Image (cartoon, rainbow, N blue to C red; front, side, top):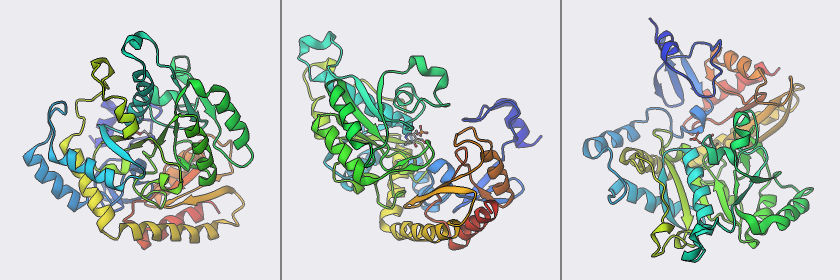
Amino acid sequence: MTLATRDKRVIWHPFTPQKNMSSPIAITHGKGSLLFDEQNNSYIDAISSWWVTLHGHAHPYIAEKLYKQALQLEQVIFAGFTHEPAVSLAERLLQILTSNFSRIFYSDNGSTSTEVAIKMAIQYWWNQQPATGNQQPAPRTKLLAFTNAYHGDTFGAMSVSDRSVFTLAFHDLLFEVVFIDVPDEHNIASIKSIIDQQHETIAAFIYEPLVQGAGGMKMYDAQWLNELLRHVQSKSIICIADEVMTGFGRTGKLFASEYMECKPDIICLSKGLTGGTMALGVTACTNKIYEAYLQDDKLKTFFHGHSFTANPLACTAALASMDLLLYNDCLQRIAWIEDQHKGFIQQLQDKKNIKNIRHIGTILAFEIMEGHDEYLNNISNIITQQCLHNGIYLRPLGNTVYLMPPYCITAEELNKVYTTINTLVS
Ligand SMILES: Cc1ncc(COP(=O)(O)O)c(C=O)c1O
């Protein structure tokens, strides 16, 4: 029996309609940008396996560090205990993050990193009350978020995400959120007035800086985001940058927040944090947030954690990934990919059946003009199958085709991806 057949008997895959599900491809190994199946066919992983892989699959440097760490300490409870990988990683993250972040809170993935951020921000307001007010709800409990946002699949993360096909079954159960559109020169004034009317009840604003990933790789302008952040901060609303996808170089800078003058109070990281090797989430906060929890009253503790919080192996993978990101030619490679994308965009300009060609850093996206602009557009499956046939892995978001390759992709591999797309959209 093939692995795919065994899989279909026992496994329920994420984001995958189960009825008539086509057989999954059994991947046996990976190397650099390539994934290999049981027949040794190779596929260029042009979307970094859901945007996580930075330096390539099965990277020997990261593997070596993991092996050594696994022989030393694989896991330990993180309340009352600590360990070298967690502390070193926190120190290094605080060095490279923008703004005056002072604390690192670990969790398991992107959704938990945003879930932590949301709870941290709401309890920040709750903790402002005198001890006698502990039975009261927090003075500010609402969240402000963008339409078309995606912040993850847990309930808090779903609540601050767009009401979409992803959340449809749960709408009645999601908490109240003030939704605004991403800002531009036309709507900034009306967005500000929405905030002015409700700011005294808004605890925090959560946003994906410059690129709305799962919402269709929608890009928006740093100038207007900066203007919005300035306004939000003038109302003492806590700003949460969800850099789960944009972090670690994807937008051309280490963090997308570097494009704006106004910095967040909380930042969420995951995906590329470990170079894509292991699951790990980080929620970093400034001293202002942390100090709200420095209280004698034990009820003001942040009662949140996971069994695998700060797993030593995951922290080790993150440290190794950071070595590769900061001390190799990685940043030049990111700039090189961006240059290549610009060249490819020239080739795409005159295509009649695509629109909204856009890019930032290593991300390039456009829409295919077929059917509606929506996630359930079946053109996604067609493109994926055609690309697999050509040895490339792409997974469009509906009719939005995008590239987000690992930074190790070679010129030959990238050209193959471009040529294939060029043919498909001709
Ligand atoms: C911006 C953003 N936030 C949060 C998440 C959720 O991350 P995870 O899938 O690791 O839970 C994602 C995942 O795509 C994301 O793009």
